[in-house]
Length: 266
Image 1 (tube, rainbow, N blue to C red):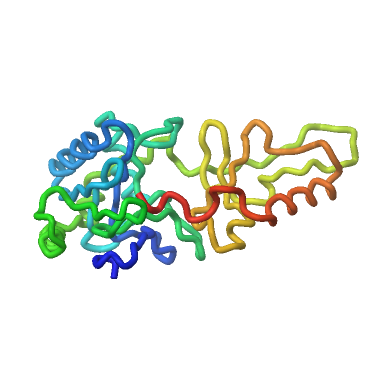
Image 2 (cartoon, one colour; image 1 turned 180 degrees about the vertical axis):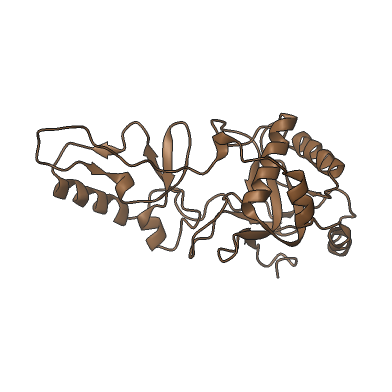
């Protein structure tokens, strides 16, 4: 059905039971994205890793297929360090534009999904077009034969390639620090949103967390629809009951515009 164009499948990378993924994908849709992906593909080849470059609506997807499922954390260490060594921008860590690496997380909890990416060779729902891999004839059979012929990435090769490396500090998972409210003579308890949600990442301006109302509606599976300004994580304009009431009303009403299964159809 996916190859026929009847539906388009999105893939989630990580198995929460093992924290492993059968594949790695690099998504790029910024100015110079295709050139950056060809550069990464060439450099991966020097490491003995065969990667397949797929066209996309605004750039491309570079796929690596594994012989056996690989630890998501180790896949990310490899690709992040490789990209930064080549000067290829990586989104996050203070950068608005750059490649995005799937799996997007080192690990996920049971019941979570992480972030999805459009499966290869499917029809893009916005453009109604199929995007092909560069190095094969433009027919489904030829494309599948090409993918099947690729050397699969082995865990031993991954471990060799990341020997001594860690994930660059700017891209490490966020650890929310305990919050110490300012000293006040008031008997009122300060309300802090970060005490009620679990953050999944952080950038220069915001903490990002799961939106309760979106999750209740079955959306926000990546857990990052809710932005909380780092500079103002708390509200002190009313007593605790009123503040909790406003919080519940805000996030159990209709989800904000733009919430839901976002950015999965690129």
